Amino acid sequence: MKRSSRLIGGMFISACIIAVAAGATLLAGAEEPASRVSAQENFRWYCIQCHGPKGDGKGVNNTKKLPVSPRNLTDGKDMAQFSDEDMVRTITHGGGASDLSPIMPPWGNVFTNQEIRDLVALIRKMCNCRFDPRAKEAFLKQQGR
Image (cartoon, rainbow, N blue to C red; front, side):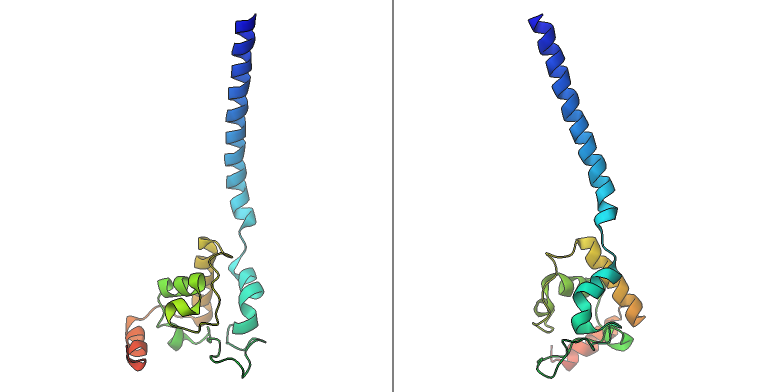
């Protein structure tokens, strides 16, 4: 009797562990898309104050007191100088990490990697541009680098 109750108890515990692990996997898979916020929502919540509702740099925080105006994300000629990786770095680590405005905060602890990539895709739509290495070269030359 003792042996069979131990065996049944062990099987019950094993079944519970398997069920919990399977449930956690299912929940994690189900939770990912539901918890992911759209780039448009993230932009409205976090970026609009400086970059403006249209992304043109005319947000409510853009005042004469700022040492650097927020970038116009709709300017395709200007935005073509930034690769997607440049934008990922800037959003993740802040403007200072890319030798841009140190006032732009890092968002890497706020957004997931995928949300940052989604924001980059949204910015590409706003500027209607792609990365142009010649534009980056010209920008760096203009800055004396």
